[in-house]
Image (cartoon, rainbow, N blue to C red; front, side):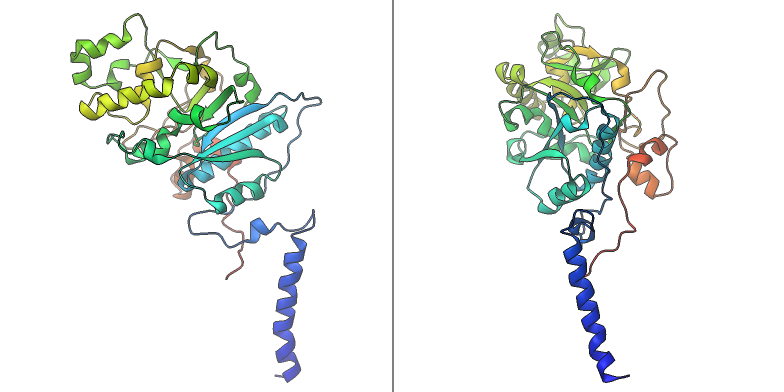
Length: 346
């Protein structure tokens, strides 16, 4: 081989590398966040398009709160995309993400995937619940971040008066503004209620045999609701000290086992029968199957505005395993994960 060619080859490679880096600074170039080498637990996502769907939009902000977990980040990205895609005014949606520790790679991933997204990341101190969590029927339900929704009114800014809380395993197929504008009628929380569900199964026989505990539902007609989709008046939540009320039941649970699930039952104890019901179309829940095996389930009859893979089975895991349920194909169009993107090796 010619000696000159020997030296030119690595120089060309180095020159190509710097040209690639310089291209990231231009508006139409490759984004550095896309070609970075990811950490083992932060996947790479395609950049989402910038949606501008409405002809005229006001300045009314829609505040959405979600948790950030590396294990569910793929679901979070799909959920965010679905909200923006179906919103008439996506520029009005502002996100408040709660995490147990600040992860620069996760925040960078959100910025590179949604360059125009309005969002803030807040740290949830997991020590607030570590001594209050009781073992449940599924390990994922025992994670401190699963309880962050109890404390969101203490974490987000005081000038935020209302929020929509969403789990990461859902997608919207309707304009989020319709859910945002629901009339709470003076209640602290609004969510779809399911009064046909056997409410007693959410608590143990010990609970139902204790007359002093059962009295908590006196004067109420409690129904099951899923805490993965909630509209919350955070001002009323703060004023009514609802965080403390939920925590009080968690303390009882540590002394007596009165329920088997994670953060759901204490919400039911405090708010079931004392909340605003929302149309079922806003939470087509249970698509992940039960909490033990996560078997496939079909859609419930009726109109749909939100699909929710609550339960053990998550659509991205079932699709990757090539054993998807039929409903998982409804989630797939919102999946921004791109395993084919090549990364620069260190």
